[in-house]
Structure formats: structure tokens, C-alpha cells
Length: 338
Image (tube, rainbow, N blue to C red; front, top):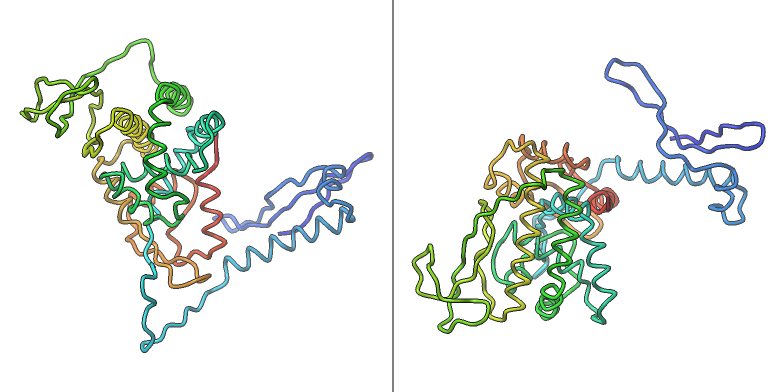
């Protein structure tokens, strides 16, 4: 990469440019980044000569690019034992779900909710993990807490924080649904003049009915209290391991958000693959981390579906090795809000 300065009579504009070779063999120059005009660069230089600062900025970009592209030698010893309890395998399939999560501005929805309360946990981190695990590893909140540790980016919360957050999610259920519908309509426009819905129900393994769960006809022929739910899809809202009404309500809003995320994923893949095919591939996309600062090695098979995922989302995890720097860029790319 090189620094290019386009000068005019009254100002100058700074660009980071790079020469690339096309498939036909010809060479062309593309702009990687526009740094701005002279006044903007002076502001970024913070007192340093703007031309010197701009050149140092480009030099740093070249250094990072070199670090990302250089071959990495990983030394292993046949006589050295692994460290006890040190994890080496992590899932990266959730990153595609994360990209949709942020495109739906669910992080901003969580931010608005958080400003109304005084809790210390990260609601965005909790809700995102509940959605990802509901899609990939549906189980109890206890199991979801464990499953979230399989992702490359580790959670910042504990199990108690999850249970505390459910009360908040239940209170804000209508707001979340409203914002999610509005934001999803921008990403995936659809008709809203006609509404079709098909009610189903879920049984609960308790003996006494309450305000939420009433005795009724169950499709599973269970003689237990049930709750109605609109969820007509291959995507399942069961199992449900909750008793309190607010937590059950939070569970279903999580299921609703998960369904929206997954439906957008299906659309982005052109509806070419079944629900099971997509989920199985996302689960299989594991990365091996040999050690601290040694990057990540894909431990999954590259297929037509993994190629479709990478092409649809604009980042790749299927290089022979991803440096820590490259993986951080993937994290940033998967968290771009709309």
C-alpha cells in the first residue's frame, strides 16, 4: 500500500491506495481508505506533521498486512503434554449469526433497555449468546451458559446474570418485538398488509395450572398445563426448563428473535439449504487454537455451504491459518451495525 496525496489549489486529499492484478493480468490501482482532506488529517495527526503522520499510518497498515500474510511456523513436541483444562477447539459458526444479530441492531436495542435499569451485566452479551445457543445448541439456560464458552469470543457473564436478565427481557418483550420487526423489515422487506398465523402450544411439566399455563388440548397428548405460541417452523422452542412466568416469557422472546435471525440467514443463502443442513454446518465449523498468539486453524471441512456463508457475509474463516490480527478483523466485520 502507498500514500497518495491529491493536491488542488486550496487543499489536499490523502488516500491509501494499492496496486492489484486483475484476473486478465492487467494491474490497476484501488483506493483502500480515504484519510480525508488536509484539515482532517491535521486533526488526526494531533500536532504531528500531517504528511509524516499519514506516511506512518500507511507504514503501519503495511506492517499489519505483512504480519497477516507471512507464513507461521508452529512448533510441537511429541514429548510435551497438553496443559490441563486448556481449551483448543472453538466454534466460529456463530459469527454468521452474530453478523445478522448486529445488522438487526439488537445491540442498540439492548443499549436502550440497559439505560432504563441499574444492572451491571452486559445485556447485549447475554441476549446474543442466548440466541446463538438456541439456534446451535438448544437446551436449558444452564447448558446454554456452558455452550456459550465454546465460541471463540468468551462470555462476560455468569449463570446468575442470565437468570437476572430474563426478568428484564420479559418486561421489555413488547419493545424488543416491535424494534425487531421494524429492523427486520429493512433487511428483509415483506408484505405487511396481510398476517397469517397458526397457533400451536407447548406443554409444561407441572401439576397445577396458573395464569400463563392452562389445561387444554395438547398435540403431544400430555395431560399437563400448556401455553399457546406462534412458532410454525422447523426451528424448535423446546426444551423449556423454566417455571416462573417472566422467565418463560423471556424464553419465548429469545426464541422469536432466534427465529428472525435464522430466517434471515436462510434468505441470505438463497433458501438453497434445509434448516438441518445449515445448523449442522454451523456446529461443525470449529477452529483449533494451538496456543497463545499462534492464531486459529480451521478444523472443519470446506464445503459448498461454508463457501456460500463466507460469500454472503463478506468475511472468511477458511484460510489455512488465521492470525490473531486476522481473527480480530473477522470479529469487527461480524459486529457491523446497520
